[in-house]
Every structure is written in structure tokens, then in C-alpha cells.
Length: 442
Image 1 (cartoon, rainbow, N blue to C red):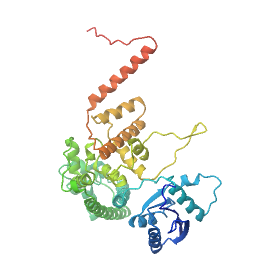
Image 2 (cartoon, helix red, strand yellow):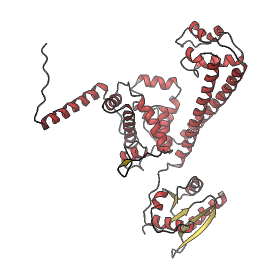
Image 3 (cartoon, rainbow, N blue to C red):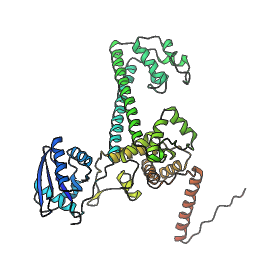
Image 4 (cartoon, rainbow, N blue to C red):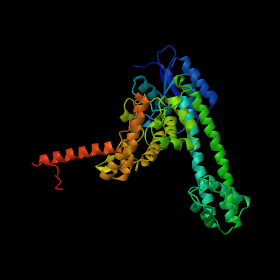
């Protein structure tokens, strides 16, 4: 026993079983508590009376969330344990009382490692960002329904403008719902930056106006606009939460200027500069300086992991937790189908894959790396490998402050070609030949 002042909890939907050393440390005792908030508060006081410093509990369903937050608020260290580590013990009786005593025993011997869980402010930010992502998905669904109603009336707004949710597209949709049917009048609503002329737009906006489709379009527009209002409120609340998480040394500071002027222009156009500044002030580094990493990707990473990655001693451990480490599970010499995971790591991995996909035609070192892998193996593998490299760059910048420097696509391609020539020379030498450069005769 190396940690005497620890406790173990077996969680349930109605009752929690807690095992901890007694007050005089002569033996262990087990107490039961209900799942209500007053009972959880009584549990925390019971543990503090016994001078408990750390508590281990299984990550059972959603039952662990409320006890975890209450105990953490009382200043106790809470170790969230994977149930797989506790179940692999043959010959052990299975009951709530035995389980809590077994958890306490393993924890006192230092044999339990906790799952990753960010700090409380990051958890609060994570809730807001996840809810906002759900609203964005709902808004996209209602936008699709608007598109369907317009298609059924042969009103080809998606042919007239590039985005139906853009300035011109939404003006046209609102005018149709308000009762406008003249294609020429609808075309006059085009934004001055729109690529097509009024005549080209008007040609696509003549349709047959059925009442059922118009009613469905109006309801979909109302739902879309209501969700957009909720998204705006979430964005304001996220900025407020980020202001409370600012580092003292970064308060009031501006993030460094981006080396990519086009990227900086896009961020300004989308109105993401305030969010970029807020994310910089909680992390102390500008992750948008990494090619392919946008403001929304930074928001996902920092809301899921926080700015402190010290719980991952190496970048390989971080990459593995983000589920971007190559792994092919085998059983009996055959590949096993991978199980789907729905955790923070997969959200970050999905965001990094989307960022990696944008590197296909980029004239940067990361773009050259993507194309190099795609030529050698496959496009899907290139997305995975580039996402893994992005995770490594993020870890190095957040953990050690190592800046990202783009060497350029040409330098990267030259380095890959030199490595390829060295491999060919080694293969030729292994079979008794020597490579010589081809001499031009012209």
C-alpha cells in the first residue's frame, strides 16, 4: 500500500457504494449513499471527515458524471477508471460491496490509472462547443429541406448562386416566402459581389408555385432562422467563457500576424477574428499559424483537451489518444473489425481529418507531404497520415511552444526525391549495381 488516504466507489443508478479507511485507520469501512444531490454532498463530507485525498470510480454509463463533478468541486482528486482494468481478475466475487472494496484496494496500491478528463473550465467550454455543433448540424438539415422544397417547385436557387445560405440566396428565399414570384424582381436581390448577372439568375428562378411546397419552405426557413439565433447566443456564451479562461500574461494581447495573407483574409471575412484572439489568450500560442488549421479546428481541440497537454508525456501518447495512431487489431491471425468510438478523441480526429483534406492542392510542406503519401499508397491513407502530422504539430506547439515553420512545397518535394534516390541506390548496390545520373546528349 502506497496511498493510504484513498477511497473506491462502485456506482449505480440508485445507490453508490463507497469504501474508505475509517477515521483511526485501523480498518476499512463501506457506506452506501443515494444518487440524489443531497446524498452526493453527504458522500463528499463523509470522505472529507476521513481525510480522503483521492477517489477512484468506474466510468459506468452516465452515472459517474454527477458524483465526479460534486467530489471535484469539494477539492478531491477523482480518478475515472476504465472498467476493463477492474474486470480482468478471475475468481473474484461480483457484488457492489466487493467491487468498491476491490477498487479501493487497487487504488491504494497505485495500480489504477485514470482516464483523461480536462479541467472543469474546459469541460464547461466543451459542453458549449458540442451543443453548438449539434445546432449547426440541425441548421444544415433544415437548409436541405429548404433546398428540397425549392427543387420540387423547379426554382433553381442552387444554380443561380453558389450557396443557398449566402447573402443572395437567403434574400431570394425570404422574398419567395414573403410572396414575391417575379423572377426578375428576385434576381434584383443579388449581392454586388455575386458572380452571375441578373439575367442569368432570373433564368433559374422561374418555377411553378404550389401551396404545399411554399408552406414547407416557409416553415423550414423559420426553423433555420430560429436555430441561427440560438447559434449566435452560443457563440456569445463561448466568447464569455473564453474570457474567463484567459491567461494573465496573455490578457489584452493580440495574436501574431498570420504568414498566409489569404488565410487571414478568410478569417476576417467569416467574422472569426474575435474567436481567434480569445483562443490565443487561453493557450498562449496561435494554432492557426499551422497550415490547414482553422479557427473552428482550434476551437474543437482546445474545448476537448484544453491548452495543457502535460497529461500526455509524449506526442505519441497524445496522437494515440486522438485515435490517429496506425493500428490494425488482430485475433487468430485475422483482422478484427474496429469498434466505433464516440469520444472526445474522435471529435478531434474528425476535425483534423477535415483539415488534412484541405491540403490536397496546397503549395506548402504539408500539402507536399499529403501528395507524397497519396502517390505512394492511397488518398485515404494520406488524409490519415496528414491528420496525424497535424496532431503532432499541435502537441509540440501547445506542450513545448515549438513554432511551426513551413519550408515550402518545393523544398519538401526535393527532400522526398533525394530520399527516393538514396533508396534506389541502396537497392542497386545490394544486387551489385551502381546508379549513375543520365547525361543529356543535347
